[in-house]
Length: 282
Image (cartoon, rainbow, N blue to C red; front, side):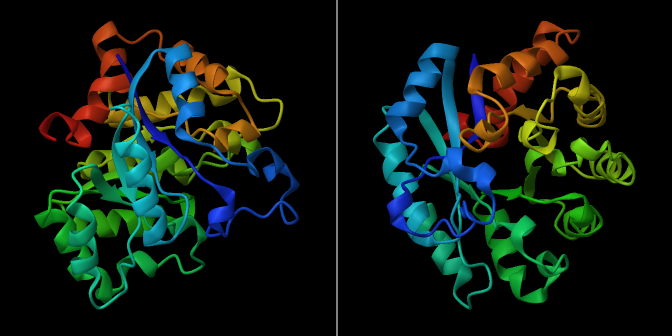
């Protein structure tokens, strides 16, 4: 059973996808259209995806409500929503609680990679929302890049009870062949905290002519650091379309992990997502 632990949906004319700027980044042209449940359902049927987690792509609570509606109308295909809440708002915990009234909400994600201040995640005003996440048994997706890793370790040490997953392996600069300090810092997080990590979003960090060998040492490092019990496969569809179609990334990941036991592969491609996001309790 495959659970896609990370994909998106969006409707362009909703108007809150501020990162989607084709003039600034022409490579995003492939993304500048609607991506809906039915298109994702066709992919799920083609590639044997039993369920998924849809993740926010806009920094608005309105989009989170929209995603919850899409999930509710997916006939059980979308099993969880990672949304967004204004964590700096004085009533942040109350806003989170209101969203969490919908049992399809499994967590939240601030778009840390797009916030210039790498210390943003450590500011004191966020403490009430971090505590609320813990108390409500919700998850926290860390969308970060290598410069954020030291602060991520500090955050995880402050809130060891918080259920955290690092999206996209913290986006190592694969196209440049960058290794240190990413490799060391991601290992520290794996060794010193209970964080999980998503095996997703790597193809868009690689060169345009990427192949499996270019990704191999990054995938093997993440698998070695987090082990087969804390690694989750995700498609990052449709963002991944800038570099790969759905099937190519799925088959590449399968190939790169093919030497693991069948139990380990079953965990990475499905069971870990169910356990991490608490899908078996919802």
